[in-house]
Image (tube, rainbow, N blue to C red; front, side, top):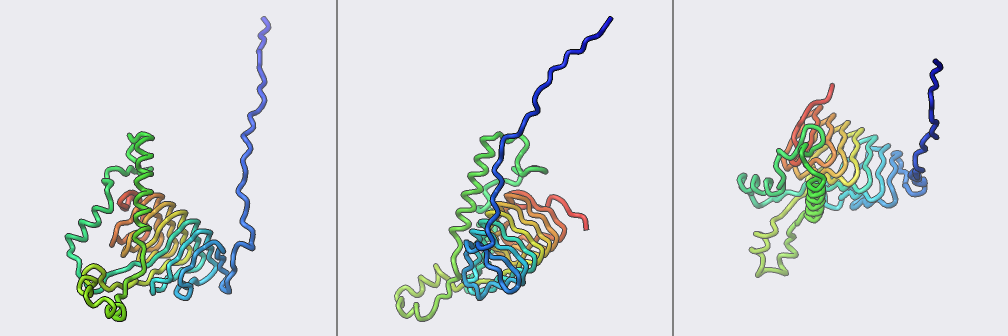
Length: 257
């Protein structure tokens, strides 16, 4: 009894050719005296109020609003990815908003319930692809509305009031005097693609994922991870060494010290 083993040889499968992203030429960046690299396609509005400490990278299509009258401070070794928008918080100086009204407006900004976030992906485990597409569309609508609300503070100059004496009282009711608050970003912090930041501050050693929305007056402490697609609600304070996920964002875990 001779045993004959028949084998068939198959050619190894070769992966389809992929096109590697071409590196950006050095000429497309401006190197500052503090060794920061700022893309020529970035939009730095009011550069005299944008203070970068150095050795940071600001990619194309980044928009930083120093034109609000408040200082935007960026630490060392920061990375702002493509499509990031940085704008200071704008507050009213004359109109006191009722706390219940503030909470109502905050709830209206977050139409998705907290139960729609899971422990791993931000989606309920039973979500179909159709519902995921609906969520992506909703996030895009929220981002578009978030960007549409961006506007410099209304100083309500007296010179303008003289030209509108008859409408002075109505203007004060509808357009109260406003002020932009300083915004600071700590060192060794990365903010990924298409994220919009309107916080008061982001600490050092923070990772903010893609497509996040950080609402006005929010604060992110040091050494935190904000996962992709997270929406930080107004006035939220993220403690140090926290991992945040969801819409609205919630602390879902901690990071090792």
